[in-house]
Image (cartoon, rainbow, N blue to C red; front, side, top):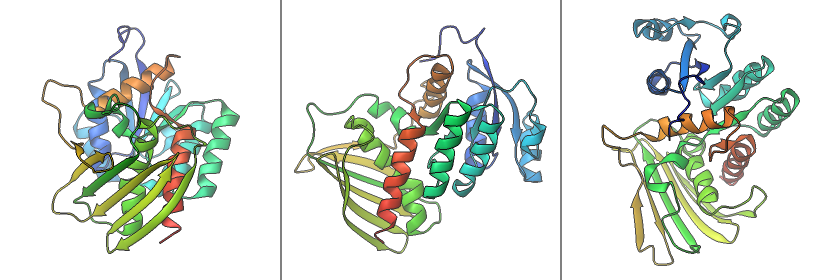
Length: 285
């Protein structure tokens, strides 16, 4: 999926956030032929030291960004996404922000307004769209029911399980079902137990069951479909060493959009829809 013209059309990109996931993003960008990772920005001195130890330029604030940066990737805590992305958009940069796009309705509206005003590209990193198992829908026709289960060893709450984990599958269901952003969405039931949330929703006439859990013994994700839940797919299979991973494919899609080409990367509106649906589920807790 790498662009054939990646060499002469490499884009200079900044990475904001060099935590556990930010370091994975940095590694993928460093080896991606379509990008030049120009610098890292992180307010934490230890994170900057870790970035510099890998040969990267690291700055403590966005004010230090060089003028030739075209785009930025935001991999900071979810409740900071809106402020960071707004600042980058206002500087004239195209922005790919990790999911969820934002964690509050006011921030969602603010991001959409700034992206519209600046005319900059704003995308949301719903990485499961690039899972090798799901590059095309795994079924024929249209299923009447989908069942997602996703759990992580990370420590968190029911709220974080919805905004950090379940939001993956909220977007993924709409993407696989090819639902428009204004498709009907209704919360049927929600139940919370400690760090686990179960929800059942109606999405465009398809019943979707969602389970998200933090604090599990192991991380996993799966999808079942059909009335009898007889068809199943494990989503957390790691690619072989020689294969592109989902994050690399996601950055390739971002490059395609920057170059004016089409891609299945979630745009700002799709990110807003997924975040709003996650917030609708949280409102029922």
